[in-house]
View (cartoon, helix red, strand yellow):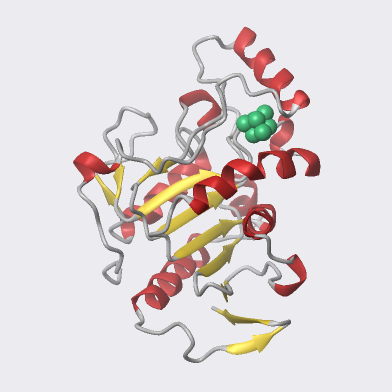
Length: 248
Ligand code: SF4
């Protein structure tokens, strides 16, 4: 794999100094349906995390990866984004291929894994039934994503895993969806110069159906990291729908 271009902070300190963005309380009830589902899981699986899952990764990350929401037996169980399920195995495996992790991913929050220049979060912090948050829940939880992005001046690019994450990022930034449409492989240049890249979500469903292959997923990272390594972001781009976007 091509060497990754992201600046890396000291892994020993990066995990303990996450941005001072406000986090939801462990018993956040802003989304009644999700709070109720969470309580049901607490009763059924008291050993699980069963709370809003906080971001994970480098405090001075240049790349922010935004997923949809915690998986029931993944992040909701372990308390770390994308940890413990199929999507996490693919995501962390890909980050490892591109040199964006320190240590080894072992599907446990105490596996010692640290991210290098990357942070991972979700558009919705609580696990939704059937992995499907409702529009109102996405809008309600947007405040936490917006606060996190606002508290992350080092972030030069965001990678949205799926259309919902893409739209959540736009909403968090106060940007119109019609100006930056989701498309797998697209890399949008936002008005402030930061990049927003799109990928289909790395879920088991998408890979089982062939919607997303490992090669496709890796191509997204390769192209985005190459763009970040460029000194200028405007080269070779075409104008589309009021924005600049380049498809991989
Ligand atoms: S999804 Fe977000 S806003 Fe809704 S209850 Fe969970 S933490 Fe609160």
